[in-house]
Length: 128
View 1: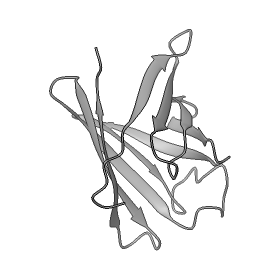
View 2 (view 1 turned 180 degrees about the horizontal axis):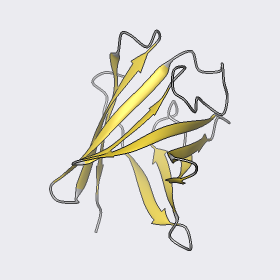
View 3 (view 1 turned 135 degrees about the vertical axis):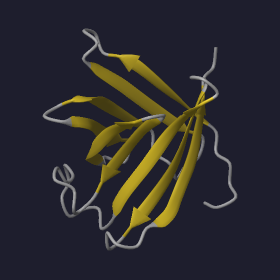
């Protein structure tokens, strides 16, 4: 959706016991699903993703100097909870900006795991 700005909201909160983070997202656009993800160490650092379409995925996560990355694909060791449903690989890198007040992400998509095209760009801003 090039050139379109979509508003929405996201929350990050600890699950009781502070071993997992719950990440919920909602977008004000009919083509973007609401989602909930559970982030934590489940035999490696992962994000378990579920959305309102019934799609579920297992993303690999990594912490980098100023943010974090998530990735899923046919070539990833963990693959997806729904193998064969996604004919693509996807990755996004989030960077923390303005202290801890913003988190910006730039995604990429590949159908052959060689050539990567720009996908979505997203910015989360902390609301006081």
